[in-house]
Length: 142
Image (cartoon, rainbow, N blue to C red; front, top):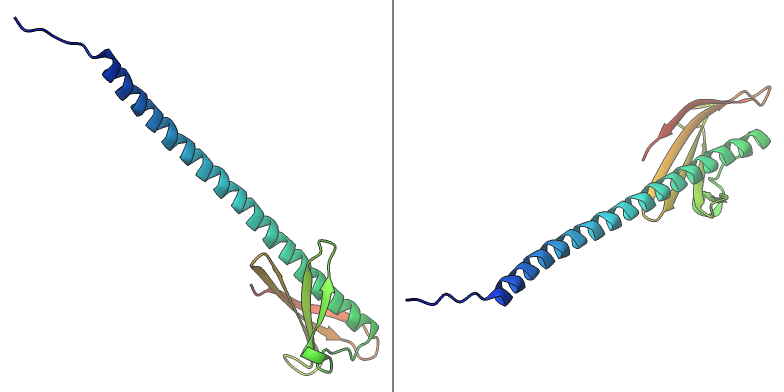
């Protein structure tokens, strides 16, 4: 007659390792998804801040043209100037007279926040007699 031995401890240990492995994999998956979600949120916020700063740069360029019809950054050192926005981000603005054609002005604003760059270009015309500035096109380049 054969004796049957029941090793209850071995079965319990195997079951414990199995359940523990499943819990470990689930915990790692949840941690990965949480970190991925957080990084995505920060990326979206940085992109929105860059867009807001670039928009502020173009609007400042429009204001400079409204104050001085002959305003251009060509004579400035570096050919551009910086505009700081309320979110502590900076846009670099370039104003070019007679570009893309005579009588038109191109305003280019570039802002970078946490690796997210936003470029906005606006082409405007100026009435020489009234000084009125009219936006012809507003383009998101990047």
